[in-house]
Image (cartoon, rainbow, N blue to C red; front, side, top):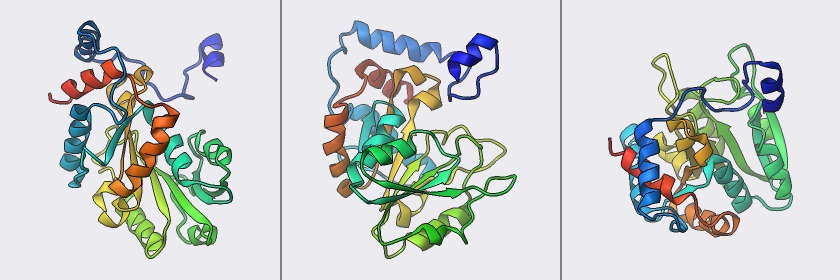
Length: 261
């Protein structure tokens, strides 16, 4: 689609990146750290300074503290984080509830790992979840629910009521949640982003995924993060180190310093 848009001169809405430049300060910081020699592997889990910055940012916005030592991993973009969560928890025959329309990596990532995707379509002109229909998708094999808010591609946003419904349906189950929150800081009209981190009942069973690429307009740096309780993050890291081992080191240094401002 991107190739076709370029060929015919169309406005390209098929891929999530901005048409304006990144901060010169951020770019200069990345160059600075390259010149200073930070060009070898970063620590497997990401540099501590960036994990700490992520922890502070989540605490500031959602009043939930993730331990930067054990509960945050810096990833090679949110796409890698999404795949690694699925690779971590999904085995042959496990079912995954996906809300459609959906970001196009969810379904193949589930299938590659032997899982069975089950789909729930958003309803109406405002693209809302039909919570009356939701329980029909839940079975004894349901292992994971994938949510995405603010939503790609509809731009709808989950509400507090939506999150309460999610709490209700997952209570007293072993179902986990993959919460794709890459657009968490790109939200308008006074609407508050409803992160799983705001709700203890959801945070304890969720992998929260974010993207510095989206927030700071550097999608080509492929740098994101995953935050989760230690018991989940311990398993995530086992897969992460074999999928990618470590992310782009100069970018991690630059973003961690940039986030201090």
